[in-house]
Each structure stands twice: as structure tokens, then as C-alpha cells.
Length: 298
Ligand SMILES: NC(=O)c1ccc[n+]([C@@H]2O[C@H](COP(=O)([O-])OP(=O)(O)OC[C@H]3O[C@@H](n4cnc5c(N)ncnc54)[C@H](OP(=O)(O)O)[C@@H]3O)[C@@H](O)[C@H]2O)c1
Image (cartoon, rainbow, N blue to C red; front, side, top):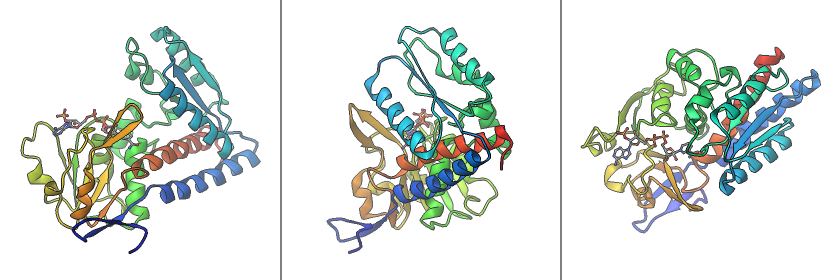
């Protein structure tokens, strides 16, 4: 048996679609672009903002800063106390907006409950929005205009392309219409491009009989954030299953896709190391592209 297959009790195997090699390829391109920018006298800078004392969020920011440094980015960081006001956060973002030496800005999510993340994001320069979630960038995506793409959807398109999963002309069903994943992914995969071009259906709680749709999907993307919601009986035999939705209970990761789906699927993302690494890689790709655009180099 190949090491890139999942073994299941029935004897069936689903080809695994890991995100690690996809991320490595994307990040190699990012590192090369960073080197070109630096050779032209531009140090790409990805700023990070953390509000509050949440250990997990602080950990995620540290990992991204370390990776930014490894890739050659400067990574100025601002940490605000948990008591920071909306105006404090807005002022930090306004400073980064005005700083021509900062090309990308990442506000670690979630922010403390008294703050409105979406309102803060709306105050960020859309060209510095490395998450690709600013309303202007969502609008650009809807219109097919260039701009930073939302990281998780862009990572899923890259993952399918890397593993040579044909998407064009095929039926994709996405379970979930959230702003982070389902809705932008639907827009992305319906675009006129060889790695997209799909017939996309989005199902959600308003579609009580959603398994009727997922069972006919050639590519099924779970984007609900409901642990174990996708079970083998929801999967068309031989389909490609992408697990995007996850919930964390403490440090425990609970994916939407039940492991037993590997008994039915033809290919499936691994429980850990699937969509996650591609999301992070896309963040750095957005950052280096922002640096190119804003500096006029390349
Ligand atoms: N792997 C990664 O790197 C990564 C990155 C970002 C996000 N995520 C994950 O992606 C997931 C989606 O995030 P999001 O912000 O886009 O979405 P969201 O706002 O959490 O919305 C979830 C969506 O799933 C639907 N849904 C929930 N329970 C359902 C059910 N029982 N039956 C049918 N539909 C159901 C909801 O339907 P309604 O609209 O009808 O309520 C909604 O559209 C989350 O789990 C998040 O953690 C993963």
C-alpha cells in the first residue's frame, strides 16, 4: 500500500491529499519573490496585531512571525492589552495604513468580545489585507478583479490543482456558506479559470435535505465547523472530499469530516495537515504580492 493512502477496515483506500507539499511549493515561490524584492532594495514587511492575553492566539502569532522571519519578511508587531478600545485598535491599523514600509497587516482573530473585528478590518487599507477578507477584497473576488484572495479558499483551489484533481466542469458541493470559507470558495471555484470553472452548489441549514446534494458531488467541501457532520452516507463513492471546517476544543481539533468517509471517497484531505498548511501559505503569498504591488517592484 502506498504511504499516501488511507487504509480502512473494508479494504477500500482513499488517496490522501496532504496540504504540506502544496504549502512548501507556494512558500518556495514566496521566498524567491522576497529575495527579488530585497535585491531591489525593498524589505517586505508583514505587520501583526494581537489584542489581549489569549495563549493560543499568542502562539499562532509567534508561529507566523517565526515563519515570516524565515521567509525574509520584516514583521513589526503590536500587542494591545485586552482592555484596548475599538479606537485603540483602529489607531494601530491607521498607523500601519500610513506606513509605506508596511505592506501587509494581520490582525489575529478572535479579538476580545467587546471589540468588533469586522469593523476594525474595514478600517484597514484593503491592499494591505493579507487575509483577503476586507469587504473591498470580497467585492473584487465577486467581480473577478485582482486583489488578495481569502486564504482558506485560495489554499483549497491550490491544493486541488497541486494534486491534479480536475475541477473544471465538475460538480462541487460546499457544505456551509460562512464568510471565511464556504461563500468565498463558491465564488472562487466558479471563476472562469482552468483550476476552477466548476458547477458549484452551496448548502447550509436552510437546506434540510443537504445530503441529497452532497451525495451527487464529485468534489465535496466541508465548511460547516460541525464536528463529524460529514459521514460516509453523505459522500458519493469515489468523490474527492476536502475537510475545511474544524472546531477546536482546547487544543483538540475536531474536523467536520468523519474519518470513516475514507471508506467511500476516492481522495480525501488528511485529518491533520490538509487545508490548514495551505491557508498559512496563502497568507504569505498575499503578503509578498502586496509588497510587490505597493512598492512597484516586479
Ligand atoms: N482549515 C482552515 O485553515 C480553516 C481556516 C478558516 C476557517 N476554517 C473553518 O471553516 C469553517 C467555516 O468557517 P466560516 O467562518 O466560513 O463559517 P461559519 O460562519 O462558521 O458558518 C458555518 C456554515 O455552516 C453551516 N452549517 C452549520 N451547521 C450546519 C448544519 N447542521 N447543517 C447544514 N449547514 C450547517 C451554516 O449554515 P447557516 O448559514 O444556515 O447558519 C453556515 O453557513 C469553520 O469550522 C472554521 O473553523 C478552517
